Structures are given as structure tokens and as C-alpha cells.
Length: 357
Image (cartoon, rainbow, N blue to C red; front, side, top):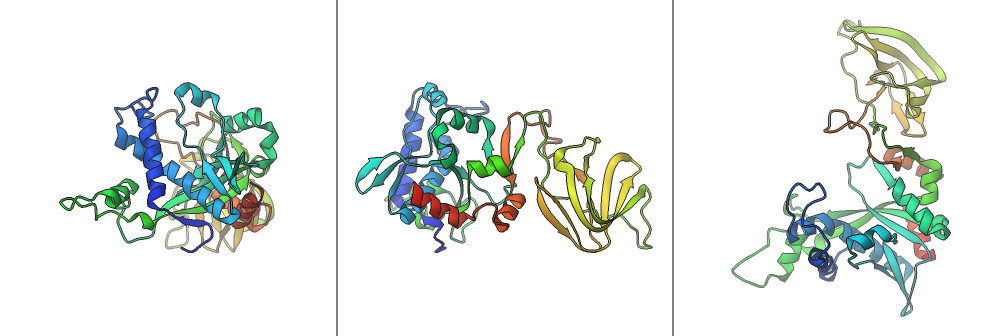
């Protein structure tokens, strides 16, 4: 992991995180319950809740510091609940430039990245706060997404940064934390970085009261039987050939903007007798489906998919609808935009940030 966009943590970094969580825990205005109010949360719970995010901030600031040759400082101040509601501050709050502290010239938002992420972006109310309070920084606002990972052979439970910290500081020979990872095996890696302007121009608003659509197509297996005939309950709707726009509906027949695709190839559109709007596509040759929400998908001859927009919130507790407004890219679409050079790649963006911050 010698990548320029990867940082190896030190014991001082871990101590900085623990100190932040300790100070948060001791702040009298902070509740001792989790965000859901499901029960009490002690010091250990607050380390689990806030530690990884703070570790990510430190790691990304260190990467930018190394590239820029300027020390980038994160905000470790603990604010009262009232102050939190009033403050809109970037995650990198000061720059030590040749032994002189100054404000950063860019507004940096640091976000977590996980390997199973399908969306990257920001809540609309956060963007509105930046637009309202830091209107002079709109063209200089960047989102950076980093992952905390472990460069060892430990299992998921052993890869715990609190365990790694205790392993490094416990000097009692009668007790050991050797099962946990070493601090030097904990890394931060930047996966994506783009500007707020990129997000607003090329991403999309997913509004409160709407669905969270699945970002990939489900594979359909039982379309034809061994004789080559359609299974009972399936029916041919029409052949699709050449280039055209086609619409994928939700299961209840709702037509959404994100369901409109550019089709190029050859396929059979198939319906389902049991559900009016449940459709399938069976591809007769190499075919692409593409739109500005989900990006481009390639299918080969013989592939079959469910051709519907499915709600990821369906079946979960609650209304099955979003409760906040979000601006998002899908990962697939973002990768396509980077490949097409409509958005700078991550390394180029980080170098630009390091130069201008």
C-alpha cells in the first residue's frame, strides 16, 4: 500500500481520536444515548460511533499535508448541542503554512467510504448551509471519500482500532491485547474526490418522499424452459432493435426519470401475467443500457434481467420512502464520468486540492 493516496496511522493519530472521543463523552450537553435513543451509550459506545469518522478525517488530512507540504489541521473542538446547530465548518479548519496558521482556501468535506457503497454525495440541507454561510467558497468546495482498512490477516473482530490502541499502551504483562491489529496496520485510503459543482451539475437530487432505487439490474433466470419456450406466465411484449429510448417502471407502474434508458442492441421485452408492470429483457446480442442516473451497463447474448426500478427501502421498517433530500452520484455513473474525463480522476483532484488549499 505505497499508493500516494494511502496513509498509515501512528500511535499519536490514534491517541488524537481517543482524546476527541473522551472530550465528547465529558461534554455535559451530550446525551448518553445513541442517535435512535434505544439505550444508554457509554464511553466505549462513543468511540465506536465517532472514532472511525475522526480517524478518516485525520488520515485524509495527513495525505493532503504530505502532498502539499503544508500541515492540514482538522477540527477537534467539542461543541455544545446549541453550537452544533449554529456551526457550519469545513473538516480541515486551519493550514500551518511555513509555521504560520491561516484559514484554508478551500472548503473540504470528508466522508466515509465503504466497499459496498452504491451512492456518494451529500445531504441537501448540508449543501444549503454551505451555500448560505460560505457562499464565497461554493466554487472551492470539495468532497473527499476515504476508507479505513487494515493491512493484515486478522479477522473482522480483531480489526478494531480501540483494540489496537489498547494493545499499544497496555504495559501489564498479565494481560494482553495481542489478538488485535497493530496500529501500523491501520490505513486510510482515498477512493473518490470531486467538487460540489461536479455534484450539482452531474449528480441528481433524490428528494424526500421518493424511493432509493436499486443501482443495478437483477438477473432473471427462469425466462425460457429447456425446450426454448417461455415459462408459463411470461409473455412476449415486443422485439427491441437498434437505438431507442425505453422506460423501466416501478413494480406498481410509476414512471420515474431514473427509469428512462438509452437502449442500443437487440433484445426481447417480456411481460409477466401475474404483475402488470413487471418486465424482463432477454438479450439476443451484445446490448447496452445507459442513463444519467445509473451509468452504462453491458449485456451479452443470452443474458436476462428484471427490467424494473426497484426500491431499496421496500420491506424495511417505516414508509419505504426517503425522509430527507440528498444529492448523489451512483458509483457506476461516477466511474463513467471519470473515465469520460467529465470529472477529474481522484489523484488529479487531490493534487489540485493540495496545491490550492
